[in-house]
Length: 434
Image 1 (spheres, rainbow, N blue to C red):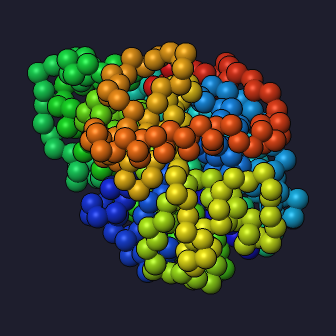
Image 2: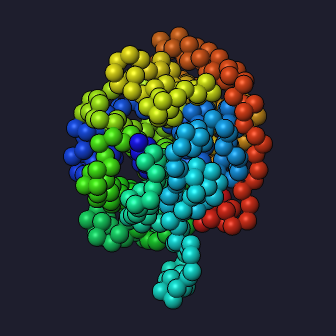
Image 3: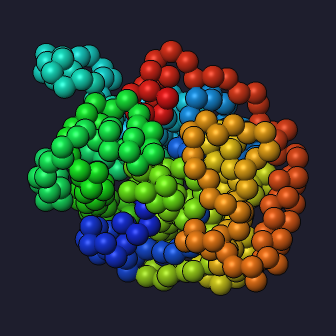
């Protein structure tokens, strides 16, 4: 059995469906089950992936930033599968994720530039353009495919592939940029435009460019289109090699992205509205079960590990999610309320089909200087809730409190955390995290 997890960093639901950017994935729609109301547990990369791989919320695993090193517990999906004879492997597009998490999933191979001997061309490029901060989708998927199709691999495999192209500053090959980015100029650098909008700007070299802010959402669309082209080729090869029919495939994003001023946020993933925590989730069940169906039940990233466990023939009592195959079959109605937590344990949220309750964690610093909306109850699109919705707000607040205090035995299963230091911290700074 092949269990394949593909995570797309920062990809919004509305750009993966209905935007005309993903013809290859659209063509596969009859073969997937599409969960239209899926949510991440965080808008932070490492935190979100930990929740996928362990079916635990942040308040249980305790990882609220990308600067934390924490060992995966025994109940992590990859470790449970390895106990059952699965070969496990990870290929990530940024090396901090490989070093902090991928190496625990299996022998991680970060397709990041800079790995391996530095040849003359790489040295010249680094001197002229600075270091590449990420690998492209084609590099990561290609490496994963070569490993997956090698003759000596085991029959049962868990493979995690992580793509980073749609993370700021949104990168794609030149032909995709030409197709999606208008060749316009601005009078002042991007950094100054962000400052006038009241937004901070990480130390990206690209923020010295004199281009309009619209340049970056256009680059974002180019990155999504590029990933679609690469994924189309990847899945085509899987099918041709007979590795598709009995596979369990998850395709999701670790979180979404605010583009130009969504909730006062520019080209980043902050706050806990749908723009940042509603995520695409498509599942290809073995044998094509539930193919082509669209399921509108509320589901979450914590549901992925229990789904894989069920289809691999085991149960894990420390998982907090539900079996998505049961949800797709209608035997489980999904969640009535879903939960998310913000980087640095700054905000937390509970949402249902109509409303979202967002509250600041008492005593937590606003390290990012975010301008917070007034009140705690909002419509799902972030609009203020009317007074008549007070009952819904009280219900969601109560659900949040009950959820936070539950399952203390899970916290006990996690070890102590360490800091990401040295080269990892340097890589994070290059990516705009510090």
